[in-house]
Image (cartoon, rainbow, N blue to C red; front, side):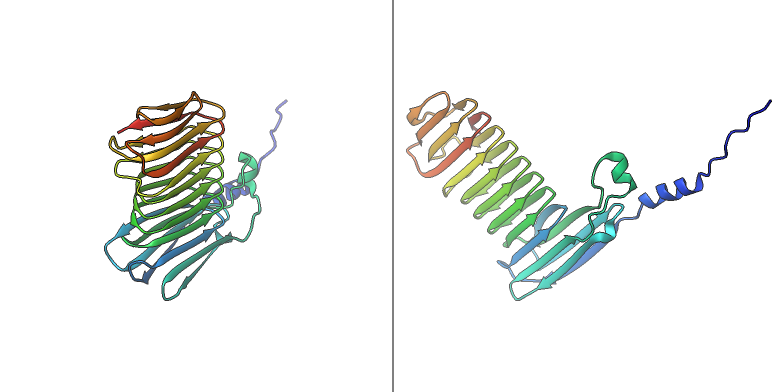
Length: 266
Protein backbone atom coordinates (compact mmCIF):
# COMPACT_ATOMS: atom_id res chain seq x y z
CA UNK A 1 0.00 0.00 0.00
CA UNK A 2 1.28 3.39 -0.94
CA UNK A 3 1.16 6.05 1.73
CA UNK A 4 0.74 9.57 0.47
CA UNK A 5 2.82 12.18 2.26
CA UNK A 6 0.98 15.37 3.22
CA UNK A 7 1.39 18.23 0.82
CA UNK A 8 3.17 21.13 2.47
CA UNK A 9 2.24 24.58 1.30
CA UNK A 10 5.59 26.33 0.91
CA UNK A 11 4.18 29.58 -0.40
CA UNK A 12 3.57 31.26 2.98
CA UNK A 13 7.04 30.26 4.18
CA UNK A 14 8.61 31.61 1.00
CA UNK A 15 6.70 34.87 1.36
CA UNK A 16 7.80 35.24 4.98
CA UNK A 17 11.45 34.68 4.07
CA UNK A 18 11.21 37.09 1.14
CA UNK A 19 9.92 39.84 3.39
CA UNK A 20 13.12 39.68 5.44
CA UNK A 21 15.25 40.67 2.47
CA UNK A 22 14.32 44.32 2.20
CA UNK A 23 16.29 46.78 0.12
CA UNK A 24 18.20 49.28 2.23
CA UNK A 25 16.84 52.81 2.47
CA UNK A 26 19.25 55.71 1.87
CA UNK A 27 18.95 59.29 3.11
CA UNK A 28 21.26 61.99 1.70
CA UNK A 29 21.37 65.59 2.95
CA UNK A 30 23.65 68.59 2.44
CA UNK A 31 23.94 71.72 4.63
CA UNK A 32 25.89 74.94 4.07
CA UNK A 33 27.85 75.79 7.23
CA UNK A 34 30.87 77.73 8.49
CA UNK A 35 34.16 76.53 9.94
CA UNK A 36 33.79 76.11 13.71
CA UNK A 37 30.06 75.31 13.65
CA UNK A 38 28.65 72.22 15.36
CA UNK A 39 27.22 68.84 14.42
CA UNK A 40 24.84 67.38 17.02
CA UNK A 41 23.64 63.81 16.50
CA UNK A 42 21.32 61.85 18.78
CA UNK A 43 20.46 58.31 17.74
CA UNK A 44 18.61 55.39 19.30
CA UNK A 45 20.65 52.99 17.18
CA UNK A 46 23.47 53.04 14.64
CA UNK A 47 27.19 53.22 13.99
CA UNK A 48 28.67 56.63 13.15
CA UNK A 49 31.62 57.46 10.89
CA UNK A 50 32.74 61.09 10.60
CA UNK A 51 35.36 62.38 8.15
CA UNK A 52 36.35 65.87 7.01
CA UNK A 53 36.91 67.88 3.82
CA UNK A 54 38.02 71.42 2.99
CA UNK A 55 34.55 72.66 2.06
CA UNK A 56 31.99 74.58 4.11
CA UNK A 57 29.33 71.91 3.85
CA UNK A 58 28.07 69.03 5.95
CA UNK A 59 27.25 65.96 3.87
CA UNK A 60 25.05 63.32 5.47
CA UNK A 61 24.58 59.78 4.17
CA UNK A 62 22.40 57.44 6.22
CA UNK A 63 21.87 53.77 5.32
CA UNK A 64 18.93 52.05 7.00
CA UNK A 65 18.58 48.31 6.53
CA UNK A 66 16.72 45.47 8.18
CA UNK A 67 13.31 44.00 8.66
CA UNK A 68 11.84 47.02 10.45
CA UNK A 69 13.72 49.81 8.71
CA UNK A 70 10.56 51.91 8.45
CA UNK A 71 10.52 52.17 12.25
CA UNK A 72 13.62 54.43 12.10
CA UNK A 73 12.56 58.07 11.90
CA UNK A 74 15.21 60.71 11.14
CA UNK A 75 14.70 64.44 11.65
CA UNK A 76 17.01 67.31 10.64
CA UNK A 77 17.29 70.87 11.91
CA UNK A 78 19.76 73.50 10.68
CA UNK A 79 20.26 76.70 12.66
CA UNK A 80 22.78 79.52 12.27
CA UNK A 81 25.66 77.54 13.78
CA UNK A 82 24.43 73.95 14.23
CA UNK A 83 23.32 70.94 12.19
CA UNK A 84 21.11 68.77 14.40
CA UNK A 85 20.19 65.17 13.50
CA UNK A 86 17.76 63.17 15.62
CA UNK A 87 17.15 59.50 14.84
CA UNK A 88 14.51 57.53 16.75
CA UNK A 89 13.55 53.87 16.68
CA UNK A 90 9.78 54.21 16.90
CA UNK A 91 8.89 50.51 16.98
CA UNK A 92 10.75 47.90 19.02
CA UNK A 93 8.77 44.89 17.83
CA UNK A 94 10.49 41.55 17.32
CA UNK A 95 9.76 39.90 14.00
CA UNK A 96 10.15 36.30 12.87
CA UNK A 97 13.85 36.60 12.12
CA UNK A 98 14.59 38.13 15.50
CA UNK A 99 12.85 35.22 17.17
CA UNK A 100 14.78 32.66 15.13
CA UNK A 101 18.19 34.18 15.81
CA UNK A 102 17.55 35.35 19.37
CA UNK A 103 18.14 39.07 18.83
CA UNK A 104 16.21 42.28 18.38
CA UNK A 105 16.55 42.64 14.63
CA UNK A 106 14.65 45.91 14.26
CA UNK A 107 17.02 47.72 11.93
CA UNK A 108 20.65 48.43 11.13
CA UNK A 109 21.63 52.08 10.71
CA UNK A 110 24.94 53.49 9.46
CA UNK A 111 25.77 57.20 9.46
CA UNK A 112 28.51 58.46 7.13
CA UNK A 113 28.98 62.19 7.69
CA UNK A 114 31.52 64.60 6.22
CA UNK A 115 32.12 67.94 7.99
CA UNK A 116 34.55 70.84 7.50
CA UNK A 117 38.08 70.33 8.85
CA UNK A 118 37.39 72.76 11.72
CA UNK A 119 34.16 71.68 13.37
CA UNK A 120 32.70 70.72 16.77
CA UNK A 121 30.99 67.37 17.22
CA UNK A 122 28.48 66.23 19.82
CA UNK A 123 27.30 62.61 19.47
CA UNK A 124 25.04 60.37 21.55
CA UNK A 125 24.05 56.91 20.31
CA UNK A 126 22.41 54.11 22.27
CA UNK A 127 23.72 51.28 20.14
CA UNK A 128 26.71 51.56 17.82
CA UNK A 129 30.36 52.38 17.27
CA UNK A 130 31.78 55.88 16.73
CA UNK A 131 34.70 56.72 14.45
CA UNK A 132 36.03 60.27 13.90
CA UNK A 133 39.13 61.21 11.88
CA UNK A 134 41.19 64.28 10.95
CA UNK A 135 39.25 66.96 12.81
CA UNK A 136 40.07 70.23 14.54
CA UNK A 137 37.47 70.99 17.17
CA UNK A 138 35.83 69.88 20.38
CA UNK A 139 34.50 66.32 20.49
CA UNK A 140 31.88 65.07 22.92
CA UNK A 141 30.83 61.49 22.14
CA UNK A 142 28.89 58.84 24.04
CA UNK A 143 27.72 55.35 23.07
CA UNK A 144 25.93 52.78 25.20
CA UNK A 145 26.98 49.80 23.13
CA UNK A 146 30.04 50.14 20.89
CA UNK A 147 33.66 51.08 20.43
CA UNK A 148 35.04 54.60 19.96
CA UNK A 149 37.98 55.42 17.66
CA UNK A 150 39.48 58.90 17.26
CA UNK A 151 42.42 59.66 14.95
CA UNK A 152 44.30 62.91 14.23
CA UNK A 153 42.22 65.18 16.42
CA UNK A 154 43.23 68.70 17.52
CA UNK A 155 40.99 69.81 20.36
CA UNK A 156 39.45 68.71 23.63
CA UNK A 157 38.04 65.18 23.67
CA UNK A 158 35.33 63.96 26.07
CA UNK A 159 34.19 60.41 25.27
CA UNK A 160 32.47 57.53 27.03
CA UNK A 161 31.28 54.04 26.12
CA UNK A 162 29.37 51.63 28.32
CA UNK A 163 30.32 48.51 26.41
CA UNK A 164 33.29 48.80 24.06
CA UNK A 165 36.95 49.56 23.54
CA UNK A 166 38.53 52.99 22.98
CA UNK A 167 41.30 53.79 20.50
CA UNK A 168 42.93 57.23 20.51
CA UNK A 169 45.59 58.04 17.93
CA UNK A 170 47.39 61.39 17.66
CA UNK A 171 45.26 63.61 19.88
CA UNK A 172 46.39 67.17 20.62
CA UNK A 173 44.27 68.45 23.47
CA UNK A 174 42.70 67.50 26.78
CA UNK A 175 41.45 63.90 26.88
CA UNK A 176 38.65 62.60 29.07
CA UNK A 177 37.99 58.97 28.06
CA UNK A 178 36.06 56.35 30.03
CA UNK A 179 34.79 52.85 29.22
CA UNK A 180 32.90 50.47 31.48
CA UNK A 181 33.73 47.30 29.60
CA UNK A 182 36.72 47.40 27.25
CA UNK A 183 40.38 48.04 26.70
CA UNK A 184 41.93 51.41 25.85
CA UNK A 185 44.77 52.01 23.41
CA UNK A 186 46.35 55.47 23.26
CA UNK A 187 49.05 56.59 20.82
CA UNK A 188 50.31 60.15 21.28
CA UNK A 189 53.34 60.94 19.10
CA UNK A 190 52.92 64.72 19.58
CA UNK A 191 51.10 65.28 22.86
CA UNK A 192 49.28 65.69 25.06
CA UNK A 193 49.38 69.44 25.56
CA UNK A 194 46.65 69.38 28.23
CA UNK A 195 45.60 67.18 31.15
CA UNK A 196 44.21 63.74 30.36
CA UNK A 197 42.01 61.35 32.37
CA UNK A 198 41.78 57.86 30.84
CA UNK A 199 39.95 55.07 32.69
CA UNK A 200 38.38 51.64 32.20
CA UNK A 201 36.47 49.42 34.60
CA UNK A 202 37.22 46.16 32.82
CA UNK A 203 40.24 46.13 30.52
CA UNK A 204 43.89 46.91 29.85
CA UNK A 205 45.24 50.38 29.10
CA UNK A 206 48.20 50.67 26.72
CA UNK A 207 49.68 54.12 26.20
CA UNK A 208 52.29 54.69 23.45
CA UNK A 209 54.01 58.02 24.09
CA UNK A 210 56.69 60.06 22.32
CA UNK A 211 60.16 59.47 23.77
CA UNK A 212 60.60 63.14 24.66
CA UNK A 213 57.13 63.67 26.08
CA UNK A 214 57.06 65.67 29.33
CA UNK A 215 54.22 64.96 31.72
CA UNK A 216 53.15 64.05 35.24
CA UNK A 217 51.82 60.50 35.32
CA UNK A 218 49.42 58.67 37.62
CA UNK A 219 48.94 55.04 36.58
CA UNK A 220 47.04 52.57 38.73
CA UNK A 221 45.32 49.18 38.59
CA UNK A 222 43.35 47.24 41.18
CA UNK A 223 43.58 43.89 39.41
CA UNK A 224 46.77 43.73 37.33
CA UNK A 225 50.23 45.23 36.88
CA UNK A 226 51.61 48.61 35.87
CA UNK A 227 54.72 48.81 33.69
CA UNK A 228 56.61 51.73 32.12
CA UNK A 229 59.43 51.97 29.58
CA UNK A 230 60.09 55.52 30.81
CA UNK A 231 62.11 56.52 33.84
CA UNK A 232 59.61 57.97 36.30
CA UNK A 233 60.78 60.35 38.98
CA UNK A 234 58.41 59.46 41.80
CA UNK A 235 56.86 56.47 43.53
CA UNK A 236 56.46 53.12 41.77
CA UNK A 237 55.02 49.73 42.73
CA UNK A 238 53.63 46.68 40.95
CA UNK A 239 50.18 48.24 40.77
CA UNK A 240 50.84 51.98 40.60
CA UNK A 241 53.19 54.67 39.33
CA UNK A 242 53.07 58.31 40.34
CA UNK A 243 55.68 60.85 39.28
CA UNK A 244 57.10 62.90 36.43
CA UNK A 245 58.50 61.92 33.02
CA UNK A 246 61.13 64.11 31.35
CA UNK A 247 60.72 66.85 33.95
CA UNK A 248 56.92 66.81 34.14
CA UNK A 249 54.18 68.76 32.41
CA UNK A 250 50.52 68.07 31.70
CA UNK A 251 48.91 65.51 34.00
CA UNK A 252 47.97 62.09 32.62
CA UNK A 253 45.83 59.68 34.63
CA UNK A 254 45.63 56.04 33.53
CA UNK A 255 43.42 53.87 35.74
CA UNK A 256 41.81 50.43 35.38
CA UNK A 257 39.90 48.32 37.86
CA UNK A 258 40.48 44.97 36.18
CA UNK A 259 43.49 44.92 33.85
CA UNK A 260 47.07 45.99 33.26
CA UNK A 261 48.53 49.41 32.46
CA UNK A 262 51.41 49.52 29.96
CA UNK A 263 53.28 52.75 29.23
CA UNK A 264 55.49 52.39 26.16
CA UNK A 265 57.82 54.52 24.06
CA UNK A 266 57.04 55.11 20.41
